Image (cartoon, rainbow, N blue to C red; front, side, top):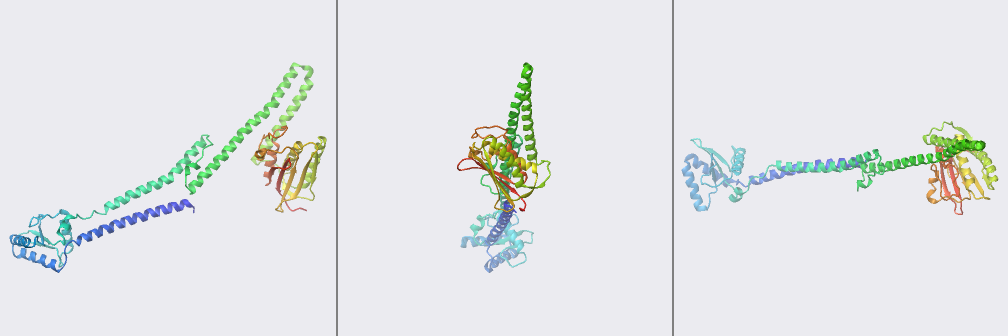
Length: 448
């Protein structure tokens, strides 16, 4: 389970805990306030005695006698301790009793009905009802209204939870909205779209998805740019021989006496076009993984000897040499034609660029792992700019440091894809004393 799961889990769990704690606290505070106000009524032997005495006076006398008793009490004590309220909510001495206070007293009287208590209800013979009670602090009792119901706190909790939920939803939806807009932008062709800077400090799965999107967009941009560059390079490579073909045809028509020379030029340019199309088809099949050839068990050392023999013949004709050091056998399941094409392109490239009078050195040895073979091809040419060491394996690449730029620029691209199709790799490195070293690593079986 990732960070996003725990973020959801902790957020909802925290919301439930806060909501439960808020409602519980509201109910507790409300009940505490009610209990505190209930204690504002005097409740003891003295209160029970006084209330019962006033009730007995009304029961055996009349309202006038009771009012007189209360007025005399107030005259001597400053105020009468016992409050007497009739059914019309009027206190006998005209003292103010708030409606909410009276409702609370009636509720307590109903709860204590039939018990010996400091709150008494009495109904006279003529049907009048009276309520007797004694507050512990008259001013405090009459001044404080009852506490608000817990529904207010619950409503506040609901509003707070709504705000929290909205904040959480916004926190989760905002990056998803950025991703959706980014996908729309990429679908519309804007491959420079990135969402990483808009993710901010996030480190969850959504941020990882944003980084994956940026990587995907970057790879798409590279692929599309490569395709556009490839299309441009192909059209450029085709334009030159086609232009020469058209010129040769025009020359043959205008000057019949030079027809043989024009036909020779047409034949050369046709062969050049055929070679270019053949290499493009080979590259396309390698990139699509459909070379069509079946795997065979071959000896890579023997394959290299055959290629080196051909390369030596061409190198000696131009004042160069090829030296090969390799013995034994290195058996592998491979497609001979593809590997022959790959090694031949690399070795011929080295022979072409090595300086006149120098030697191209080719060696075969076991790599660190015993089931891998490393083939090293070293020349004494001008080398390649450090920034171009990876680019030389791209189609139609031409290094600015090379004195000559013959060919189509597809040889090393085909070589790399052929090597990678066999589970290997190829790398280029400049030599400290000049020249270029190509290292090809291939998986092989046990040497016989």
